[in-house]
Length: 288
Image (cartoon, rainbow, N blue to C red; front, side, top):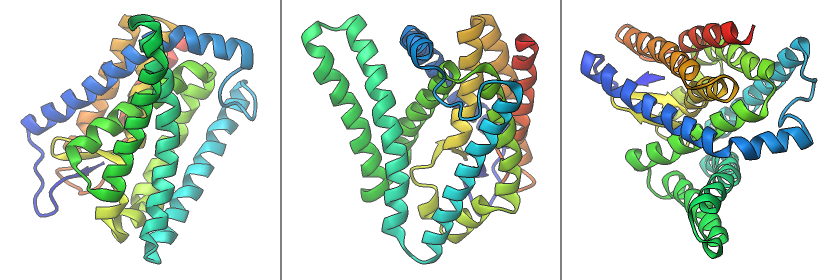
């Protein structure tokens, strides 16, 4: 995450409150999505197994699952840096669009179909579901290829991030869902201070952040931050209940506010380590 203004740090109580409110709205949206899609995802996991478990669902297997996904994310980020350094902007945008749009279409189709099935006449279910999913993809393409409107990009990507966080929470094994935030928090420290994310933003910030970040008031949050800020509360409400989810949200949001406050001393900070440390401690308490 970063401060929006290059010339001046604007970390104030009001800005922190606005950022926290935006994140809370996104987290609550993820909880609503989780509640709506819970029965469908439960059935899918029961019949086909977890959505991502190449190394199994044991403690060691969950750690390996997380490391494999971190390795893939690192390789993709290095590839994006390579493209930007060679001024291959169109190729860069195509990869970003493809990766975001694919997930957005599939998960929005599921979410819209569940909503339509439960609330709309039967004859509207298919056109509504495909229409909403298609519209999300079109809007993602618009902000990436045509004109980046921060407010529109924030709404669309916040919704997609909430969907992804909810999906992981309900379809991963609990230990893998807990291992992912830990592994990505460690990678986030490296990526922001020394690794590909620092290089990516330093090469072309105006291009690199489009389609991969949202504005939370004066601050910029990565799409990955949004996913993990919603994953743990969604996991808590899915496994235990609303009270446990609220406690998890509170822990994550306190960690996020602390991280944002620290931006008064630095321009760029990893958005995951402090919030995920607090969130994982709360979820880990319930899990054991």
